Amino acid sequence: MSIGYYFNRICPSGYLERLSQLIQKRLAPGADKGAIDSQIWDLFGETWAVMFTDLSGFSRLVSDFGIIHFLQIVYEAQRLFSPCIDQYNGILIKMEGDSMLVLFRQPSNAVQCAVAMQRAAKAYNEDKIDAEKILVCVGIGYGRILTIGEHDVFGAEVNAACKLGEDIAKSWEILVTDAVADQLHLSDLSFDQLEGAPPGASAAFKVLYSL
Image (tube, rainbow, N blue to C red; front, side):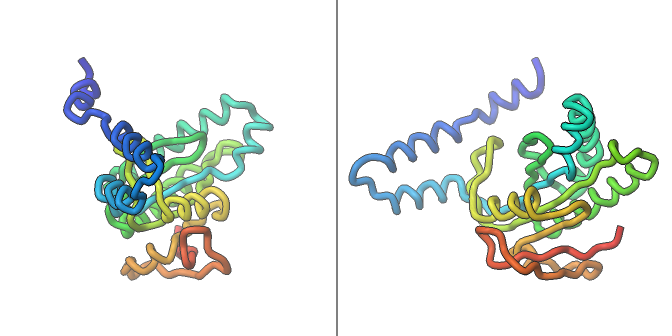
């Protein structure tokens, strides 16, 4: 038997079933939605730093070089960034295409991990042709979110981090919400405020760091 089998026996996946029960209860006529919402937050609410990563230029890569080349780059990115995530006590929740969703208890760890990932990508790219270079964009949020076991996470800071990492950040950029910036006391980092803010955040900043 694999270790995953025994782990699942110890930690059964009852999160989704319990959440489904509460959502069904919330849908009932006359339901006290406020009380049910409080119960959901009591059961599933946790405070995490949320990181979304995205690999720049992938639509072009798939179009020009095909899906197998895409899979190769995704595989290499996961191999390259996994040690960084482990070093800074992150938990990889899921991968969707070329995007990674990672949780950290401390926002400082999330930002330091992002910097380490960018530096790892720079070193990796030195002897690669353009089509094989890994160019990563990162968005980070921090706050109370709903964590549904190891299945998924939901919340305003989740949405903001996703928007920053997947839609707004460019290659080599690390973008964070104001909730992250307020928690950081890293002497070697500074920030530039962005003109706008993604939904779910009051402000957003670009982390200034050295490669």
